Every structure is written in C-alpha cells, then in structure tokens.
Image (cartoon, rainbow, N blue to C red; front, top):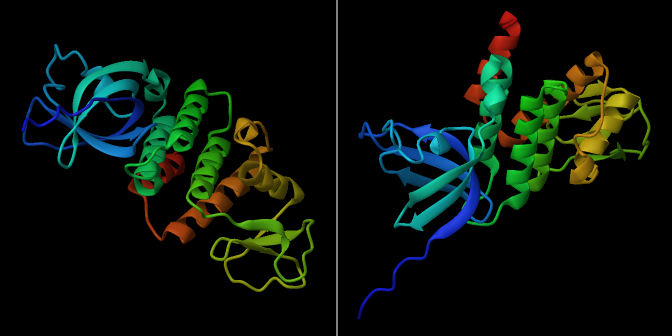
Length: 255
C-alpha cells in the first residue's frame, strides 16, 4: 500500500536560533511558529549566497514558512520574510535584548502545540525594541512577565498575602511571587515596591494584551520594575540565561 504524502505545514514563525551543522551549506534552526509552537527545521542550502530563503532563516527573522514534517524535525521547503527587524542590528544593546527574548522563548514556549499568543508577544517586544521609542527596560519587563504568565508563573499581586492590604508600600518576593505589607514583611529576598511600580506590575500581568505595553514610568521606577520582573523570572525558572548575562555586561560597560 502506497504511503500518503506528508502534508505541508504553512505557518508564520520567528527564527530563534541557528545551530552548528556539519554542512557548510545547510542551516538548522529553531523556530517559534504560530501553529506548532517550537519546532526545529533543516533548511537545505540556506547558507549558499544564491539561496532563495537564506535571509529568511537567520535569527530574528519573522517569515511565512512552508515546512514538511519529518521524523524528528521539519524540512524547510520555502520561507518568505515578513519582518527582519533590521533596526535591531544597528544597536548592540537592543540586539542583545532581542537575542535574550529568543532564548526565553526557547526555554518557556510550548512544543508541538499552537502558540499564537507567545509569538505575538515576542513580535511585539521586538517591534518596540526596533522602533526605539520605548524604554528597553519596560519592553524587557513586559516580555518577561507576560511570557511567564502564559506558562502559569503568575504572582499574586492583589495585596499583602498575610492581611490583604492592597496599597503600597508593599514588598514583593520573587521566590514566592507574593506581596507583604510592612507589618508582615519578613522574606529575605523581598523588595519594596512604590505605588507606581505596583501599578505597572499589575498592568503588565493582569491587563489585556492589547494594552500591556501601553504605559510609561520614570527611569528610576523603570529600573526597579525591570529588576523585580527579572528576579521573579530567574527565581521561578531556576535557570541562567547566557544572553541575559551578555546584555548586563553591555550595560555595565556602557556600550
């Protein structure tokens, strides 16, 4: 009995990472797709100068993809670029953040299941980084927070976990993901949050996606928000991100 031909998967996807291969011509990539979440694919001849999809298979490229399912990976038949985020490559700090977003996706996004919200979040974050009109620390905090919430890492920001006090000053613990008031603050890793930072945390994590990037903070509060969200992410995932360390190195060196 003849085997039925494998159906093509037509989907949109963001190239997250390129892996080393033994071939000088082929490219092996990880992709966050709308319809199948994280997938890995082999792009035959993508490194050749005249490849029809060479530019579409580079990291941080968002493309329309034609994929053929294989045993443990997909074969990329075609790719047409939707957005290459060229502006990110003009600023090393923003580029480093974009690469960090990709590493986050590789760690947290689902495999072999639809991931339209994850993809939309990553694309929005990259768009705001490339646009250059928003504080990168705020963009970073939104991507981290919303990605965590999509995967079930949702802190309790309603009020003090002991007495219910809803208003600042409150202290946030990245380890427990809870708030405490002055009377009940006792966790060693808890950081004080001002009224502005608390409102921003609630906006990012509890608000609608359509409005999650629509806020502003003074630079000092933006730095506090970014620190809180990053510490929460690291505490919950128990993972170190090489691209995040590189980003902090660039900031420390003032690049």
